[in-house]
Length: 301
Image (cartoon, rainbow, N blue to C red):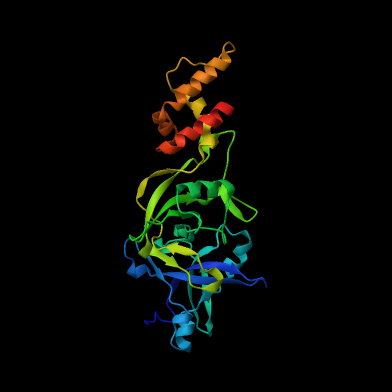
């Protein structure tokens, strides 16, 4: 184990945990070394006290960092994840002098960190759509941008995920779910970029209090996107799609006071027969097997 020198500044991605007593600890998950950055792999797993061989190394590699600034920020935090700059207190080696990274000298900030959320019950797109609709339980508050895993192909050490923005979600009753917008469906999130994550670049936490939470090793970079994934059940946007079709496509099924029922039926028939227009509306391909689901909600409106 190589020491960094007691007076050197360290940079660690920490996840905050509040005990029942009210005490808040910022557990180290990954470390950032400004002079040893490898493109696409800026973070490395943190060396902690459990890896230490003696008392000196326990001081040099603490499980958690105390940060007064982060502690006071915690009640109004945007996320449990912090990028902290710290060094060992020269007057008490069991303590640290620390602050939240503010981007000085071109260094990264907390918003550059990406959390990986992998929920065992989500194993395919259909599971993901349902979880986003009803909400899923999440341990803590995720990073500003995070990756939500929905598929894990066997044997290739990759995870398929969608790239999410925390602002597109709402937390209710301990569950995180997509925001809805009945008034303006197209302004709500219908799709998300697909990313393929290399499992070797995912850093897990083995600390009991935050076990299961994971950080991606890339800082401030967006993985190459592999298209878009539809996130909503078709019932969510069915009515709005018909309006879109009538506004943007050549059709003689215009809604008038006369023969209104006939015009609506004709518009529905035309809209259902144009999957190319559904794809244009969504910005991504609509699963063929789900197109039939669109007929029932459209006819019920």
